[in-house]
Each structure stands twice: as structure tokens, then as C-alpha cells.
Length: 262
Image 1 (cartoon, rainbow, N blue to C red):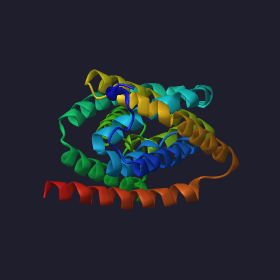
Image 2 (cartoon, rainbow, N blue to C red):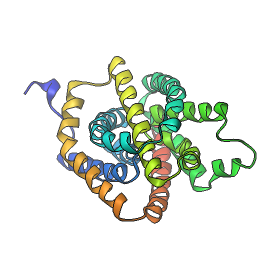
Image 3 (tube, one colour):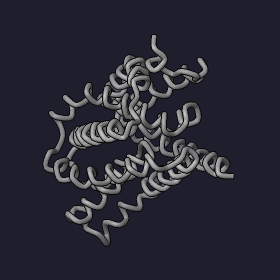
Image 4 (cartoon, rainbow, N blue to C red):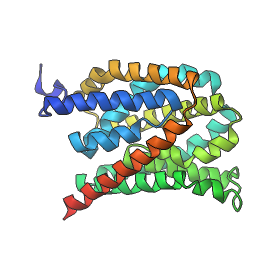
């Protein structure tokens, strides 16, 4: 096989095995909640592959997984909620992708950790939800700003962007099923637009596409299993525990970024 097509070249076998396990867990989460796989995958595989490689790979695999999930989203999404959010997000993704291409590995690691930590803490402390007393989250200017931030954070950090929209979506979507469906549609549209921009910027190589294809079976299995969990149980306790674990992981990631600068 030509060298430029070899997946995971120069990556140790134990690290490749870890990448497969992490992608399975991440897409199990996506199957259960409709989004959220990118953040844990990026946080953990950055240590194995480097931040740029980890982010581009998860975008590729997320597109493959989202193709499988989209039919569920089309049938259950609240389209009146989803459509207006796309425009602001597109602008955020465009700016975030441009910044992603400029940041060196050490800087990107530090920015990723800071953004994800801030996002998770805001969600854990329900800061956006408390703002509803003072701010109308359903006002067009507010939703457009949240959508822009969502695209910006997601494009730079590789995940976590939809956390900026989660409070609004909880208020706007009437049921858990419509919330999950709307998450699936938004996540699918965002991830496909990001892949297109990363491809134009020259970050999507043939070897990364081969890696994504190699990961597809575990990604689809994880997505299917997570979907079954969504229909069988309530994810509240699992989601709270996941947030705590991700905060710890993102703080460690920030530590690594600082160490690389020093």
C-alpha cells in the first residue's frame, strides 16, 4: 500500500487500540444523546495522536456516524428550532476553522482545554439556565450569538460546541425525543460543514480518510448501542458523571498545553 494511504503510520499498536476503544465509547455517547462524542474522543486521543490529527480524525468518523443517525433526526427534530441556528453556527465554524489552521499544536492544546473546561463548568453550574431570569434566551439576537459561539468553540476545540445551545434547546424542544432529534440534525449539519472547510484547508488527507474507514465498524456499533440505551433508560446520572470526568480530562489537557509552552 502506498505510504500516503497507510492508516496510523508511526502510531504504536497499543495507541491504535486505545483510539479504537475511545471512539467506541464516544459514539456510544452520541447514540444515546444525539451529540457529545467529539469532546471525550478529542480529549483522550489528543494524548495519542496530537491535537490536529485527533480533531480531523473525529470529524471524519463523526460524518460516517451521522449518516447513520440522520434518518432518526429527520423524523423527530423540531425544524422550527433547528433552521435558524444553522446560519449563526456556519459563521462560527468558518472563523473557528481559520483559527484552527493558525494555531500550533501546543497553543491548540491549551486553547482546547480552556474552552472545553469553561463550557463544561458553565453547563455543570447551570449558568446559562440562571441567565434566563435576566435574558430572553429565545430572542433572535441571543440565539444567533449562542449559535455563533457554538460553531466557534466546536471548530477550534474539536467538540463541545453544542453545549452553548443545550439550555436553549431544552427550553425550545418540547420532548426528550425532539431534543435528541434536533441535536442529531444540528450536529450532522455542523460536522459536515466543518469537514468541507477542513478539506479545503488541506487537513483531510487520504491516510486520515483510511483511518476513518477503519474505525467505522466500531463507530457504528457504538452508535447503535447508545441508541438502544436512550430508548431503554434515563441518561441523567450517566451524563452528570460524564461531565465530571470530562472536566478532569480537560484540566489535564490544559496542563499539557502549559507544559509544552514551557
